[in-house]
Image (cartoon, rainbow, N blue to C red; front, side, top):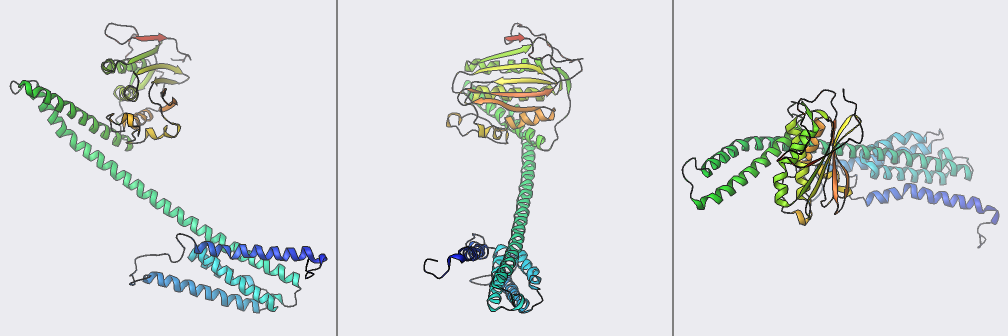
Length: 440
């Protein structure tokens, strides 16, 4: 306009034409350039097993390349013929572009769309076919509507095809991972099952040899026997964890639930941990309600959950361990909260700690023995009882609170232990529950 090439009255019409041309360039040329820079271009896609050609593409890739060239040539020819006709049939070539997009994704779609658009522009310049006797504005409208229709049709279909292929690939990878996981579970179950018998035999003979069943044991042999027996017990515990984990994954846990008082189960678990706690100088404070907390559960499995939680609290701390075990009734749920003063669990790790074989990477606990199955087994056993096992709260360097929730039972527990400070029993504090539960 400043050079008098465009009069001021035509500024907006000229700007609109210029902007539309730039927009068509972005819409039609940019996708082709981006598809050429893609790390895994749509051409060629190998389908099936085909023989390879030395030094280059295999036979299948050559066929794909020829197929693309044929489709592009057909697109150009059909578009040219349609734009030479005044019947207004230019959109008849859209199925051909859609086939190219379906077969070759974004690369094929962008090539076909650019070829069709180029022929349409040339026809508009020549004034042939649908552009015959149209004004400049009418030619622009007809041309841009055609270009937009071609671009959107081809690119949307290409995106759909690639999204479908990614979904199929993800489904295939997921199925493969599931199959591998099932095979690993079968192997672990078989290995653990086959190892249990020889380990039991070895442990039995070591016990008899160390206690003098086969004759007096030299003093120099006693400590090695004790060490071997201890390591054999550790190996047996690992095998038991593997078997329990495989049963949980296979949903093959035995069902032998009895009517219990949760206070008794917690009290027994606290007493089992007393010996180790004394060696570590740890403090275990148990808070029990005055009224029974009836549940229907497998006492052995429930005890295993509590043992894992208590042992974790005793192991994963750099200070003198302090644990608090609190039992309560909340609505229709029985709750056991095990609070420790350990290293804590980061927010991002609070679900991962319940995964199989998950171990902390903290160098301070590198020597803590274990398989990384304790919390995985604990959550599986809790869910098998219709309950949950979660991390209720955790603060780095201050401690973690694990919450075990179980359904309350309406039946009277078969075994109710009188809560008192008996001789030889761990000290317990008796308190009224925070929420009264209605128990028939």
